[in-house]
Length: 298
Image (cartoon, rainbow, N blue to C red; front, side, top):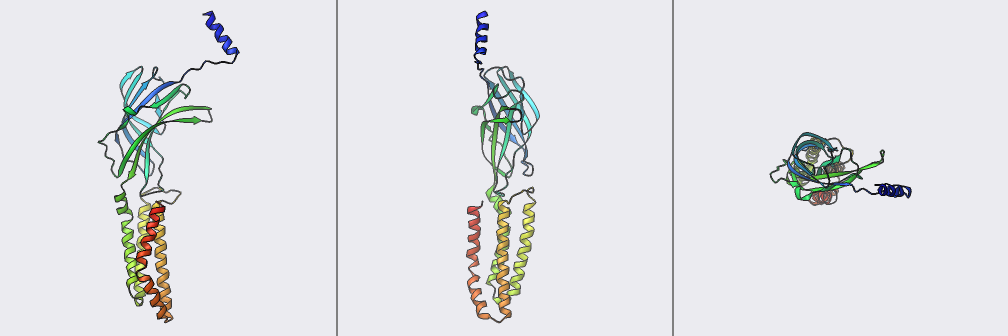
């Protein structure tokens, strides 16, 4: 005993501190059910099994959800080195709508120990006990897969860090449904406007009326699309799509007004020349503009 005390005194005098390995806990999460994902707030509910296998005795301080709260917790296994729970939780995740209505989201479950820092406890993902149940049907979204990872959460103000377990469920909107509901009506509005170019220049007032009606319909539909998501500080893909639509309708107005002015001046030769060049060219140029939009801005 005296030798051990003497050894400790010598180590402290020399500035040598014995290193204590941090405890290790393997975490597995198996998703049973997912509630509706609220695009406005990023809120959702999750029902899952949570398993913990501990190298030493499991931490008595327990764990907490950093992005929500447990609504109910049932402890199914309670052994010193193993814990197993069924949990229902209300959680939130950040929402990125830049690609709306073709956006992809991540539904996260973030777990952190209540008391032990990363020097005392480290989490590790248990992939063998993690996954998503095949019976989950998430209305309106595709489930693209899942991932489990560990990251370090630094509390700079307190000068400490904690180990975090993060389980991610990757979801994306159904492309066909999004296209049909968001863009197809606008394409039909534009198609009617483009067919106005087939009309002879002497029907210029009818052409202007068709373009005006198309603009009103496009604005109303844009408002309807915007009401589907919360106000954001950036342009979504749907907004960029509608901005391009407005510029096309503006170009239609400009061409028709120029034709009207030329008709007033009896310059029929120039009117016919413009009419011949735009009559079918718009059916090539406009789809090309939208194709470039989908290729480079989605």
